[in-house]
Amino acid sequence: MSRPEVSALTRLGYGAANVGNLFRELSDEQAWAILDAAWESGIRYFDTAPHYGLGLSERRLGAFLRTKPRDEFVLSTKAGRLLRPNPDDDGGLDLASDFHVRTTVRREWDFSEAGIRASLDESLERLGLDRVDILYLHDPERHDLELALQEAFPALERLRAEGTVDAIGIGSMTASALAAAVERADLDLVMIAGRYTLLEQPAAEAVLPACHERGTGVVAASIFNSGLLAKDEPSREDRYEYGRMPEELWERLQRIVAVCRAHDVPLPAAAVQFPLRDRAVRSVVVGGSRPEQLRRNAELMAFDIPSSLWDDLAAERLIR
Image (cartoon, rainbow, N blue to C red):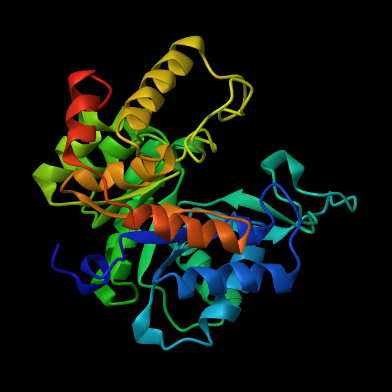
């Protein structure tokens, strides 16, 4: 990747869903403190989306980044869902999507070129900035992947050709959608959410080989698997995506924990550094709803992990 916006990605990035009130409500002051901790920890890549808090994440992140020199950070947002007035708003919260925000607007899928351009323009307005560096198509398989391949990705390619954005990509947690996008569109980046982690690596089957062949960069997100890998000793009762963890996965996790313990390596350190072992991975994006989590993640990224840990995990067929 020769594009400066891609090569300049910091090894650790911040995914700003939490400052959109993901899982719990944050005040503006709390959100600012989280973003400030990310910046002070050396993070210079920030990712957001209209989906996150129905625009709240973009507004808060933009307010923070407007206080920083524009050439010192890389910013990505996403397209595919437009925010439109919600005629069915009853004063409730967006809890169906896990965001503690009022449902005064609702998400509407739109993969047309007009819709993609409108999404970017409206994101810039919420951010209060004149440009984003990277624009991803967000979860296209949840609406219509074939339509995305026919209309949305060509629209993104035209935005890049015009210089409106510097790099384009897809953000998804579905390996098959990621692979199809890499093979059929001219993308700079893919954001793999939860499918290339220390615990699970389905993206290694088709997505990473396609990225290697096409020269497409990878951003690894959701690398803690719903928080399972975020602490040294996971609990069997911990949340796994939308339900209880399968027994086979729990047994695999226990084997990974044992290898980490044998090498005196914190499980979260291995989790945050693992994706970067693949040559296509440019950055690992983590969330965080407290400043201390951001500082801790930076420490984990800097932790010195012996190569013997990776050798033993590979010997146990826990990683490739």
